[in-house]
Image (cartoon, rainbow, N blue to C red; front, top):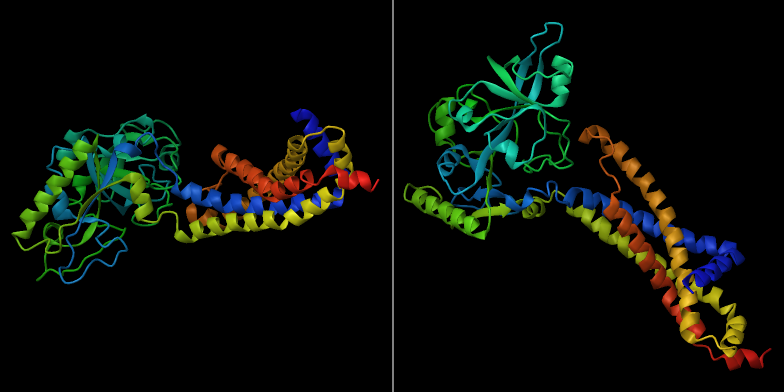
Length: 441
C-alpha cells in the first residue's frame, strides 16, 4: 500500500511540474539555511572528546579583588594563579591532574639549512597526554619523574617533525628550544580537534601547539604566558620573575583534574573550599567562597565556545523553515482541491477517508524529502563558503562539515516541513463529502 501511495504521489508531482517545483524550492531553501546554521552550532558545541569528557573537570577559584567581582560573565576568574596551582596540585584526590598554559619559544633545528622559528609551546604536566587522549605517532609523553626534576624532554607535533626531521621517527633526537637542549620523547600523530578543549580561555578553535614541555621548566627558563593573563594587584618593588610567580595575583593557568564519580568530585570541591578558607586567614580570597569544579561539556557552555549569535541564527533558521512550510499550505491546498471531483468519486467507490488522507500526506512528505535533498546540497555550498572565509583564521580545511547526525537532522526537518505544509490540505480534501461532487457530475 505504501509503494502504491508513493507511486500516486510521484504521478501527482509530475502532473503539475511548475507548482511542484515552487513547493520543492521553498522547502529546499528552508532546509538548506536551517541545516547550515545548525551544523555550525553543532560543530562548536558537540563533545570534542566523548571518550574522556565524563571525567575531565576544570578548576576555577575566586581569588579576585575583594572590592569588585571579576568582569568575566561567569563572575570569577576563568584561570587560576601560579601560587594557588602549586598548592592544590598537592591534592591526592584526582586520578590525574595538570596545570597548563600557552607560550612561544625559539626552536633551533640541528640542520643549519633549516632556519630557526618561533613555535607555539604548551607547558604541561605528564598527566596531560592521557587525560586529553592525545594521539602519538612515535614514542609517548614523559612520566611523572620527569615532571619533578624536570627532565629536558619534549613532545613535538607531526608538522614540526616533518619540517625538522622529514617525518621520520625522531624519538631520542636532540632539539634546542630556547636556551636549552631537549630530547624528543614523543611525536604526535596528526591531531587537529575542532575545539582546543584543553584551553577554552582564548581562541577556542585554534590549532594545538607545536611543542609540549614539562611544566616545571617554567621557572628555570623564565617562560611567560602568551595567552590570557589577568590580574588585579600589582607587586611592590622590583621582584624577580620567580618572585612574581609565587606572589602574584595574576591568573594565567588552566587547571584540569580527572575525577571518577560524584564522590571524588565532592571530595575535591571540599578540598578547594578548605584551601580557600585557609587562604582567607592570610588575607587572600576575601570574596564570598566560590570554587568551581566544572565538567568539560558544561565548561564549553560557560565559555560560550559556540557563540550565542550562531545559536540565535540556528533558531531563526528553524523559524524561517517553519514560516516557509506554513506558506506552502496554500499551494498544497489549491493543488489538492483541484482534484476534489476525482477524490469524491473514489470515496463513493469505497475509498476510506484515512486512505485518502494518507495518500495526500505521503505526497507532501515526498515533496519534503525531495526539497530536503536539495537543501542538503545547498547547505554544502553554504558551509563551503564559510570554510573558505574562516579557513585562514582557523588553519583547518573543512572545519564545518555535515556528519551523520546533521544529515539525519536535515531529513527530520524535511519531514516536519512536509507535515506542517500538508496536514491541513490532506485533511481538507478527505473531509469533503463525496455526494457534493457526484451531484455535480
